[in-house]
Image (cartoon, rainbow, N blue to C red; front, side, top):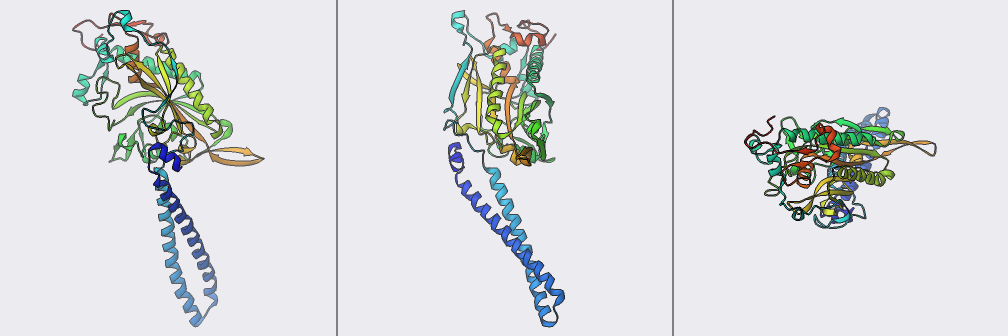
Length: 423
């Protein structure tokens, strides 16, 4: 755990503080049990005693009662301290994860061909210019209504989102995932148990009056769906595909990706989530990645797969693979999807366990959870507009989306002067 904390760039001393608190928890528990046993023994002697002996025993009983109360309070305090420190620790990093910061990832594979726009004879436009010409994106009115990092999807933009969501859910359902529409507001325990109130807390919206949190991903309500439950091993794997709005404060990103809809405060997303036996977690992680690759290949996007470095992992992930699509006007790959193996980290915090038969006996133990983005809508639209744009300003529609867009093969710019989204 010390090595894992060090690799993450997190506080190593937290491990020693936890061990110390746990020792106090254990010793205070032993002390409480000893005092309670002495109190019970004394309680049996008092009725049989008389005179001075009884008076002395009653005095002793009073002292013991105070000591038991103090020991009980010390035990509760030590338990609470241990739990709070435990919640601050990130998951154990998988030994194969590259060590380092955001730029120290390892490229595992690349897919597709990056277009040579110069050879095609035109300069590529960025997604916002394309989206405005199509009558698909309106950020100016969104800024008027909500501020920066918000947007309207209008006309064909709105239809494109619905097409993406329906196509993604169709792929997930075919793969065996149960489609889910999940709550966007959750209680503190759900958010904390999933691992989003530690290092990620600054990016979470909190409604203080009601003590609810707005989710940044449907991973949160999906992880908490079976909290405080025991799942029969024969039911595993359990796979869910959640669709929800997502809310992120984007703290610490001032001046970064401010143009267009790449980095926004609110967006919709289709998320895959799996509950599996811990020994099956690594294989499930690869399966989630394959489903993400299938999706991006169906959208005909050039992308690379990276093994995210230790310092860039979320608190709950032991290992994370990102699929990054090529964005022509930025001249680099940018994250579109991610798949994380959380092993038993979330399940332990949320008390999600599995029941199995071992050597003829029933055994209950934590299971493992994993999550994988299938379609984060705005970033996917960015990648489609920029990679499938044509010289005349239109955008070619990937074949997988055509049935969900009334058979359209091309998205055409709206006539000059027409209102964005007008029919």
